[in-house]
Image 1 (cartoon, rainbow, N blue to C red):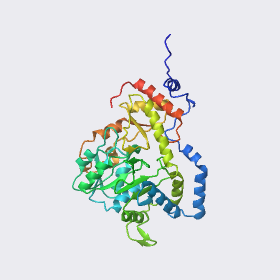
Image 2: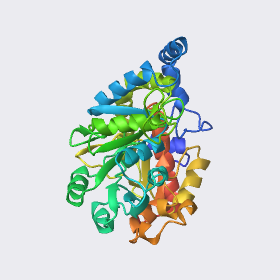
Image 3: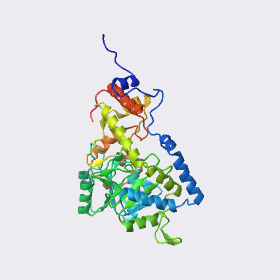
Image 4: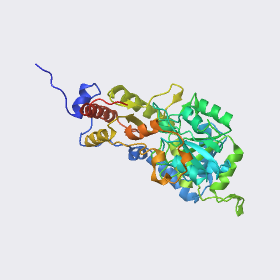
Length: 400
């Protein structure tokens, strides 16, 4: 007698050995679920909130000072300066380094738009380079190809939670005299050869947007560096250019980290390593079951990935997204269009895109992010796998 072929997502999960699905098929597997994280921390977060409102230290103050010390220690750097967002962190770090009008800053074309906006906010001009086909990270060869006489800095973006090849980037920067600003917005806790991101360049910019591996309950960011003079300038710039009250030395900005967000981030920082371990565990389970039609992120042995996102690639990405969404799987697309294709950059000079960027274009057209957060349940991971298998069978072979 011919064996029945399982057709539904739940049936496929069982047939493939991913365990009995313990959730109703009508329930959506969320792309991210911050409510689960916050429910588990309710008492700690409430205590932090109470601590802030009782002291009234809403703008800078003791909680910001404490978080800056704790996060600097976590990143193994001398200084951390809390700011209002990851975009502010990028801009203020560049300004503090003396980079601005007339300067060029190299940015990978496969990244969130803020990586380039920070350059423009500093008064400099972004120049886009390509990324590597397997990781989506900045391609050192493409970086080398676009450096010109006005290039002052490079922003390697630790995309998806995996560190860039900082050995090659730092070596190239040293020979060309470039300031290296890590964009570590997606990589809290990631490492390169055992060293944490945030300590791998001249400075690093972090975002604490709520969905990040270390996320606030609102906007927030930080600049980390071993250059204490640079950190001091960032601290002045974020606070209206003040060295002391009423003593404005610089043309500054209102870009401070809120005291309440700092207190909440202190709570979450204590759990970050455990959450990253959970993300890696989910990623391993996903990798073990995904069909050959999907190309996951290449992992590098020298880089400890913290899986801010779990990207896969497929040549029929949009159709894949529709099938998964119809099957109750939350998905995202990162980053389309490629950064240099945004209408906001139409007036940039031709020099901003001096070479072809085929890999960035390919990532923009093929990347799909599957659910990835620490509080995912095993049954949900298995359901994602089964849905991907079903969708790829319907779509046929992919050619990535």
